[in-house]
Length: 189
Image (cartoon, rainbow, N blue to C red; front, side):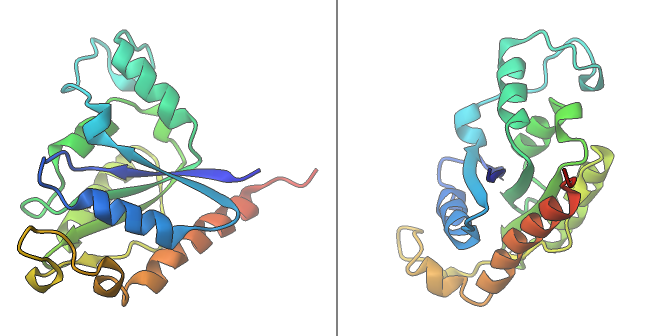
């Protein structure tokens, strides 16, 4: 049975380019042993953390938290995909992570940040968060450099495959790393 990977799209700006990037990452990561879904935080639309108890207790009171927990529990690993904001990450993705605790434990995660300089600072900031959640930070975290010449006058990608052709092999390596991790962790019967 295929392992499920969730690409968590961590931007909710109305004019974002993240949806196109998430679809490209999903297509590029395609692997016969993985089922890869996009989890769009703009569609999930969580409020700011409003649970009365700390998430580590798992005693969720709000219906939206229970639904978020059930969704996340379906996945074996994650790709966190987001734009770099001021050398960090968007509030929407930090908030979504903070709602839960046990659901993230020991799950492998690759962090893909897009920005004018590949989002290296956003990657470092998010690694601290995923470590705090006891996630397994994967070795491959491709930087998704963007530049003005990739876009038309409507801020749409002219050729997304061409724009990210140099990084595509690393994105494919993320799939290979997931498969290797899952096969290594399977117990012989």
